[in-house]
Length: 359
Image (cartoon, rainbow, N blue to C red; front, side, top):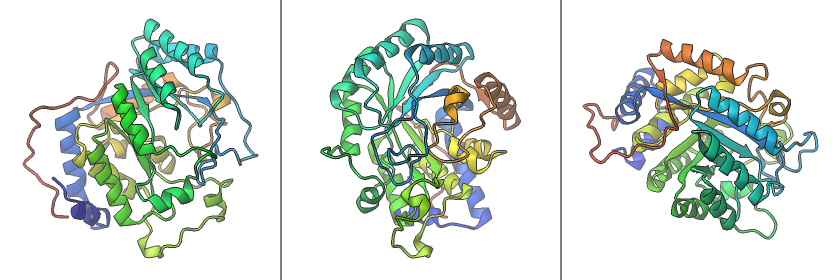
């Protein structure tokens, strides 16, 4: 098992031969624990309204350049029927922290999905009151994704100011989600300004302590209409301490996360594909990831869900994405999974002959 010190050492490793050992180890552990099948989660961005003012996100309510939308229930359910017809196992309903998403309105959508399709339902709607989370779980929601973004309290407070009058703590919410019976997901950005190698190692160690079912990782991509993107906020660390927001660094974090959380479902994210449109997603899958989340949002809304620029290909339909993914996966010896793909817990974990404790 990797120690905290070994994690940090691997994060700063640049030798290509050593990194090949890391990639090989992560891929072996991925194969042993979660297999070769890649699970598809159909991502549906149901609203770009947000009450938060996060310093990195283009959905911030301070961004006056963005035209806002909120999908109707009929639009959402039509997209979900297509996601089921295309053979995806899960629908992910994602939005900004939108108070306009009413609790019972969404609960009814969840009930309809569970009654009429075989899909698992994952929610990614930010910090919501406990009663909302309980209502949606009772309606049939299976999973909830809430990124803690960074385990560094000072950096978190700098980039993620709280809403007026609210003191919600994301780790407490993650604990409550577990109590409610959700599969629990969280994650971070790699290379956000102010992130150091020790704090990134702490993030990975926190993944292990939280025993997460899902872990989302992607490179930080600056948005031009945010305080970080415009330079209004400049964390004071030496450049040598700053974690780069590169493809290689993101892959290192994916690989190390697979080693410390071998059972978790780990996506090769849209952000990684944005950094490298040709092979970024496949590299993530070859270095520990086992999930892909194709964007199934209608194009007229997809262009408006601009967390960061260049997020997705507007012309690619959900069905075309599925076909292209199937071909790409065959090229790396992987297959498309069938079904919702929950976390598979192992009582007697397999043993690998290799170790990755000496970078």
